[in-house]
Length: 184
Length: 184
Image (cartoon, rainbow over all chains, first blue to last red; front, side, top):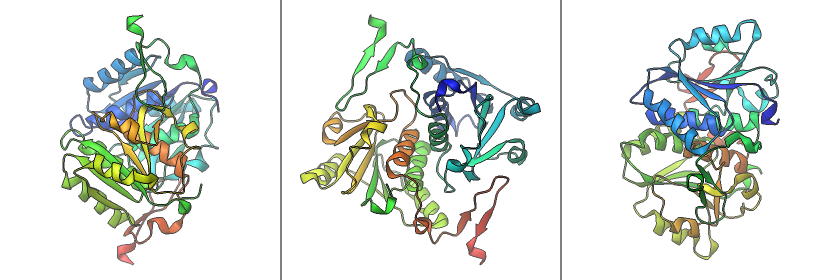
């Protein structure tokens, strides 16, 4: 599936704890951005530093990527999924295997990919259109999000996706090649 | 590629910082285990709690997975790669795109996948047989490891891989199904 064909893709991080989850949540938002999401929505404890990290990386590395805090994530999910407006995909180690699930998920509608924290309300399993597992072994919500998005969204081939950044990394088999557009 | 055909697969975490990296490193080791590695090797600051987490998950969820601390990771890599005994794959956002790289990486020899921390010695770029990037955008070493292993190792189809655990999660489209083998 080519990324350009997919309508708006959001990632919702449930149950963030400012101290304990700081870096995991930060990595989660950056993973959402790098693998093709249009926005990350933070729920749980408010954390301006997470939003700042995501904004700063977007400014430096390009593209448009939104982030915001959502105080009432379940209400937002309920209203987003009303009348089937958006597809809700809940990533959980208890769900259906992702290789099987991705063939069944609609790509015609906006999608919200929900990534749980420690305590996910049981309503989540019923509100979501798909409960999807990336393996049924415990590992990491960051790993699950990356593998799911990479499989579902596919390669981020559109060169305009990360346009306008100040810094650009050029792939290389040896060493680091970085173009600094600020100096141009 | 079927997992069973690959010789020993190790993941080396460089530059661990006990306080700051605690949860990222913990997730990294669990990701290594879930995506088919045989062991995780910790370098940087010593951290018994990381090793305990990995051992505890392996006991509860099955399979055999080794973990240990390595005080001299670069020396270990040098001796492991001597005479081409093991293949060293270094994951870095500066590297060659992974979809291209995985076709070139030998699957006949033991492999060590190196995941950097904040400061990776420049020697790493030359010591490694492959410098591989999972995208050239900043995201997460956990995401990079998961996507790389999923692409390179392929599905973990061997049912014996996670045998002998106390807990087993059964995939489900709704809710949580867990078999507790302790009670059997």
